[in-house]
Image (cartoon, rainbow, N blue to C red):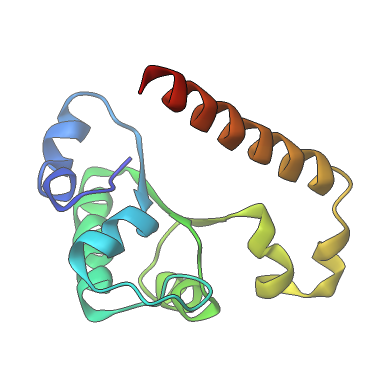
Length: 131
């Protein structure tokens, strides 16, 4: 997973170590490269797209798949398609915004939401005990 500029610069070494599929985490990477706005989804800024293009160049040259994941925007998905990215992985809550209302009624959406909320509460409680 490529989530930092330093990981991006080490992508060739990661592939040498046996990586066969790279995944760019755009939430973290964009926050380290560009100022991230609070709009829904990560936008295809100049810095982020330069990073994605660099990763595509490396992975394509080395025969490795490249995916992009995170809180995506329609504009970023389009930019990734144009850049030849193999796959975009969207957060389940973003599916209706990205692909239409028919994605709002996923069978397990409530379970996923409840599980995420419980996990966050448990992490906060554990951190409070440690503090």
